[in-house]
Image (cartoon, rainbow, N blue to C red):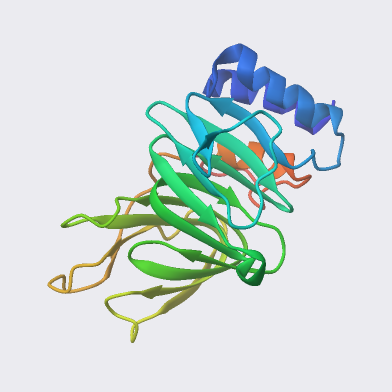
Length: 226
């Protein structure tokens, strides 16, 4: 059996969009064989806007665009070798041509997988340089006491907190080994504090990687699943 077909049971159980919606996306993945599916917005739920205009299925996300999801909304989209699951109440901007490898998470929650080559992610608490990575971010915005949750699901990162640029962190993971909270509070003894694995799953990562014709590095290796 084509190993991609195991996704049918996995994501039916996951229930991201209900049986009809998620099955449609999986059929598209299976139809592509080992090739990536076409770029653009592959699945929408609820109110999703691009640069303030209601988004449409298959719409291409271009450099400089801002993707906004409303209450109860989600969006799955593909940009080149990268794929994203943006959850509700989230605002994410992608760099212009001059900063094509920049993603800015202004607020909210996003799971991302990236192809080869460096990328830079800006959150409200840090600058995150990544390479060959899957990662999950929850950014609470700029309010008092706000923080950023960052899980490097796999890959390599160089992370520089805004309040402690003299204390950057560089590390690699293979399976969610080092999730963090990053703070913007100068009164905290440390800008980065260990956290657990929150609000994202291996099944979601597997789906995103399959959208761009890849498998996550942990696939088929057994061990604990999230």
